[in-house]
Every structure is written in structure tokens, then in C-alpha cells.
Image (cartoon, rainbow, N blue to C red; front, side, top):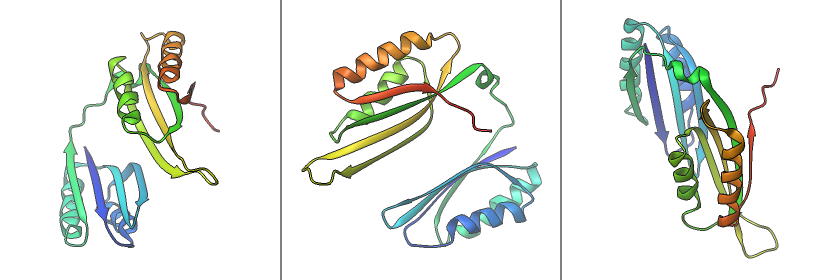
Length: 176
């Protein structure tokens, strides 16, 4: 069984360490994790796995952590998505002038194509020496086998040209 955990804390802390310790003490294992600093706070996202009694122990530990941070968790069923094996992983990197609607337009483009967004990261920053800000967007996409990647790439680049943004779409390269 699996448990999705998300946690937010507004001050500097050992949030990530406390979550990992709770998972380890419950005899569960971490399948995926992410932690990032947002302004003065921290956000953590984790996927833990264990048998039902270990997950119950972890849920009790997480309930105790809720007094110090905003911790949310949800138990998942054991079903494994067999479709993931037939999908291709691609990366889309976009650089654009910071303006309202860019991120939503990109998400809608991929959603309309039937493509699942596995991971999304974006940030905006002020350019030095110029009175302008830039937004960078990084997407990891799961492209179903039945979609032609060449056609998708052409449509995506045309779409980005229409939005006047710089973009690339390329396969994920495994590092050994």
C-alpha cells in the first residue's frame, strides 16, 4: 500500500528530516520525495510504501507532526498503472517573458493532446541590467505511444512560436 504525503511549514525547520524519520521508524520506505524552499517556507511531497499496519503507524506519526506543520496524507490502493510502461518520457523547457497566462496556456496545450504532466517546475526572476522579468518552465511529460512525437514536436514549437516563447521538446536521457 502507498501513502501520499504533503507538508508545508512557514519557518526554517527540520521538516524534511522529521518526515523521513517518521517513515523510517514506521518500517515504510520512500518511493519518491521532493522538498523545496518557497519564500520563507518549505514544501515537501513524498510517496511512502509499506504494508497496512506499517502505514497505520506512519499515519499516527504524521498526525503528531500536524501540530508543528501542515501535514496532509492520503492512502492509495495497490493498483499499479500498467500504462506507464508504454508511455515515453519527454522534457519540455520553456523560457518566456513573465506575463500572465503562459503557464495555463502550456498546461492546456498538453492536456488537449492527452499528455500527462509528470512534473512541473517554474520560476520567475528579474533580468540584470534590463527592466524585464523572465519565466522559466520545466515540464516532464508522459507521452502515450499512439501519439506521434514528430507531429507533437511540430505542433508544440508552432504553438510556442505563436506565444513568442523559446522552447525545446526532447526525450529524457537516462544517466548511468
